[in-house]
Structure formats: C-alpha cells, structure tokens
Image 1 (spheres, rainbow, N blue to C red):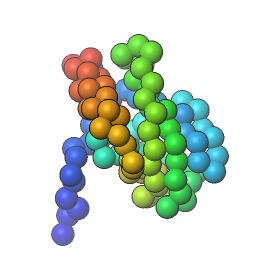
Image 2: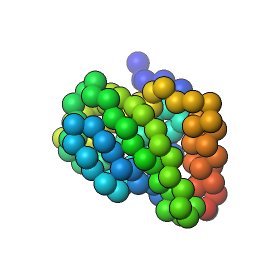
Image 3: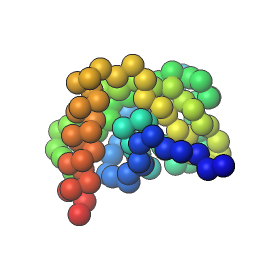
Image 4: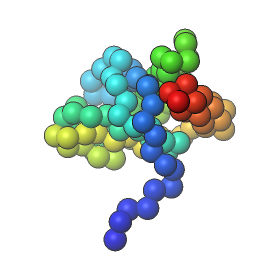
Length: 106
C-alpha cells in the first residue's frame, strides 16, 4: 500500500541552517511541505533526533523562518524532517512563504 501524504511536497528554492547533533549552514532543501522537508545526500542526523532550523527563501529576499522538527528518515540517499510544535503563526508563515516561492518559480 502506498504511503498517503497529508501535505503535498513541493520543489522550491529554499535553504536551511540546521542545528541538531551537528550544525549545517545553508543546506539546500530538496522538497518541502507544510508537514516537513527533505534534504538530498547522506543523512548527518539519526532517526528520532530533534532539530531546530532556520528555513530561508532566497527568491523572496531576506525571509528566515525558525522551525523545529524531528528526523523521520535518515539514509545514504536523503534525510527527512517532520516539523513539530509549530505555532499557528509559524504554520501560516510557512504556507505563505511556500506559496510565494511556488509563484516566484513560475
């Protein structure tokens, strides 16, 4: 049975500064949804690790959105984060910036 997605994944121009057991700056985001995001390449955190990140949207100017999440997939191919504990304001800003990034790329 295929995995059902609660939020569609979108490929937009976004980067993230990630703070977990390691700190990674300006990591390119492979895709993002209102529920989480994915990074390409070998994972640097383990499944279950909490992370704090600053998501930036270069096409929109100086937009930086602080978010928290947990690693839900970590492999040699990619690493996925599920956002957790977001306030209503963070959710609204995430949706706004993702929608604006989609528009900017068309």
